[in-house]
Length: 179
Image (cartoon, rainbow, N blue to C red; front, side):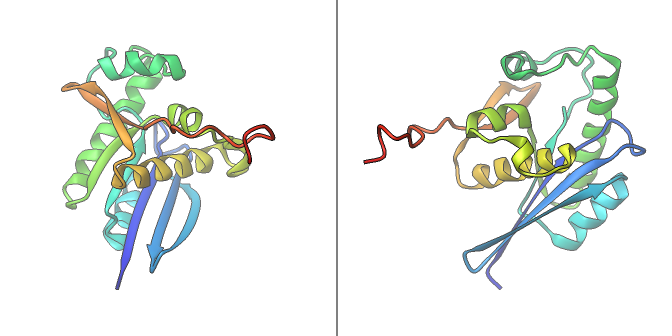
């Protein structure tokens, strides 16, 4: 079967809170996008084992550091929050541990920052889903799809890299430049 599956996750800091998951399945040139709420790391791992995606993009820091990395500093212009804050440290710890579990399944994992992707792609998160978690998961998934098409760039260094879309060279259509 000619099939490509990509997963995007908007990860919550702990398993008691909602995380969003988005699955894009491309089959014979058609893309099916499905987003929903998920809670535990085990639920996430079970989906990955079941679906065998080409890649998983996680909207969370994937690090054990409790200070800002070069990638985090570069993402501040898009609204990134410091890893020095306790809530971000909890999210980073969960993100790192989950990414290690996913890698053990043989699946590639990338770190994304959906606020940056949203701005670069010119999306409006609220138009994607009524759920903020699911909307961020959709954006993470779209970023992973772009990554597979070599339409992204890495920000950061050896301490951590965040994948963001390459800016489009095309101008958005307006009444002045449509024709």
